[in-house]
Length: 245
Image (tube, rainbow, N blue to C red):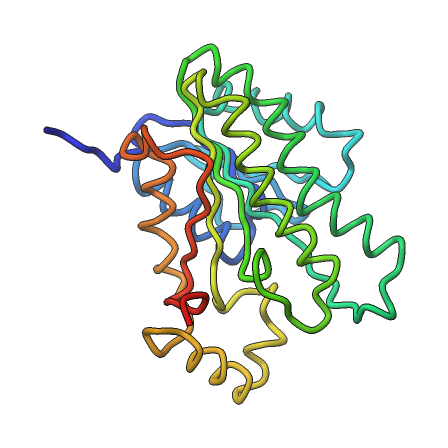
């Protein structure tokens, strides 16, 4: 019985790949033999232009999503792997949430993953194989200060992932989500700038530490490879057991 975590020969689109967890996953996919298109507001400076190509795009501009998807498909052909790692957290307290902050957060964190996937699904359907990996969060089920808009978007991602799986898995397209705990990224900068806060979060986990970037690689490769042929509609918490306590 052969079960493979290989992504050799695959074509992957990774949003938010200019830094943080998106970059870590994109680099792991390249190392595993896939060709990767990075899509982010900032062009990823690590892309070599051969096996990894960077495209600059504002994913919160939903009107431009079809154009972005077409640009992605032109690079290496239609992707069979989509990783929706781009995200935004305005950290506005509930009494200070603005219409603009709310709309931008929901557009980038919840709407963009769906509409980019919708645009790329026809290419996956034609191959009868695809992987879509969304990004949920601890705030998909836990409340944190200043997290009204972000938490709403990430709670929505869990249900969106189920609904996308119901819509497309019969076409061979598995749709799942990762929910990272506290990792040192630009998005969690305010947490790690406060050593006492970072330590409190580490103590909340079952393993006694916060995440390291390499901790996301194994789960991501599993959900992007043929090893997950019978896994769809699921959210995997990669949080050291934070949500188990």
